[in-house]
Length: 251
Image 1: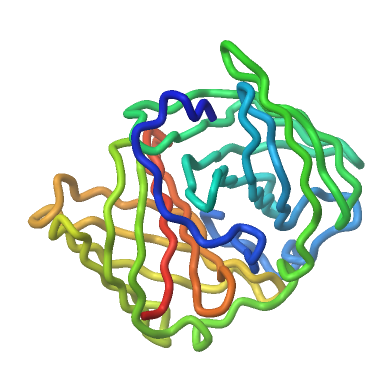
Image 2 (image 1 turned 45 degrees about the vertical axis):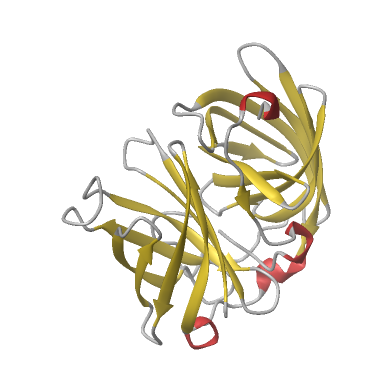
């Protein structure tokens, strides 16, 4: 989360308009309901990291996996991802990874937090050389059912990873199939599907075309709506060595 060493920034949607995003793998219908003793949900607030005040959005899924995005001045600087466990009003994670865009390598962290279900969450993320603190409030639009027909269409946007950033054009059809091309000519394809019938979360799979990209890897993660007509995507490689984050809007 150290802004002083970040070389690239990805233009992001205003985070307070986030409608939802949530994570890799398929959720079940029974586990999709936001439990009264769980930190599951979308949370928006601020973080203090190495002397910098940041905007932050954190999404905790029903299985304990979480994704977070931190930003400043409307630009996203990195993606957080990990898996934690919760008990009543506490949540902790020992395997967090901070993927600063353009940083070339991730920074590991451990996270501890306390929460009031569907109201607020606060805690700290401990890195090797500093500790960041955060607090956020619950976003009830997380409990709005995801709809493929609502997101079908054409989009343009920007994406970031450890290697830097790029722009792209993307189409999504009513079945959830997606196809896109980046500013560097890299072609990607993939699928979106509602994670369950009760939350505003899409499961995401994206494969890079090895003939047009530097790699042929597949990333898996989540997507959600952001404001009117916008989308946010977050995913990692299977070994969690890199992450992908993108924001897109309709032309």
